[in-house]
Image (cartoon, rainbow, N blue to C red; front, side, top):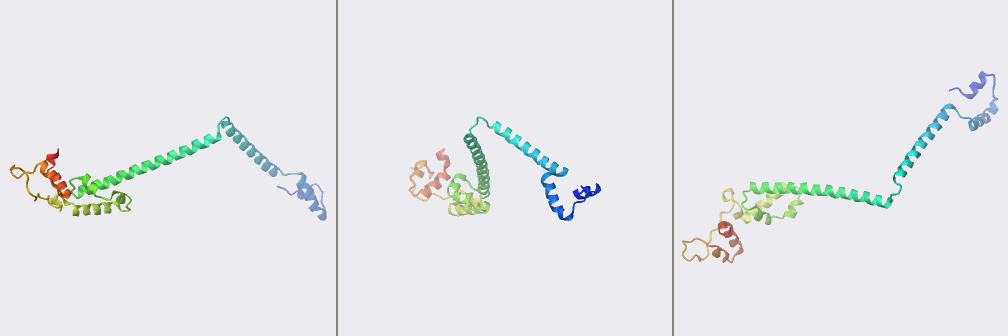
Amino acid sequence: MKNIHTILSEYGITVPDDKKSDFDKAIAANYKTVAEYDKQAGKLTAMTERAEAAENTLKGFEGKDFDAITKDRDEWKQKHADLEKKHQEEADAREFNDLLTAAIGEAKGKNAKSIIANLPIDELKSSKNRDKDIKAAIAKVKESDGYLFDADDGGTPPAKFTGPRKDGGNGGKLTKKDIMAERDSVKRQKLILENSHLFT
């Protein structure tokens, strides 16, 4: 793009040096180049398009309660967060139960419910090393209550009834009544497990 002074000189017009500054200011205040015009026109077009888009958006909200819209949005966000949390908790519970079941099976547990009742479940659920801690907890139960596990895997052999017999001459076989008469709750529980056929 040619300078204004170059264009003037091509037509034999020369602006004195001491007047050039004032001349340039006058030109800038009253005239724009084609490039400047296009730039301003582009900005105006973009502003017009944004204004139209905003107007159309506002029209879409006509007759609607903005507080209600905000409330609905927040409710849906909370529902989504709750659903994600629920799915995560369910997946976590499945993983924990799978580890627990596998560990009890590996330890040759005979009664999973009784073994689980003796485990610190909440503590194991929050453990950062569940697999290791679950196995360690089951090992402790096995040590204290070996009758809950098969003897061929190191569990304590089934306890034998050593108290006075009250079988009424039935050949030494225990009856349900004999077992329930046992005052020691631990021995009674062992006898119930060993003679479960009497309680079915």
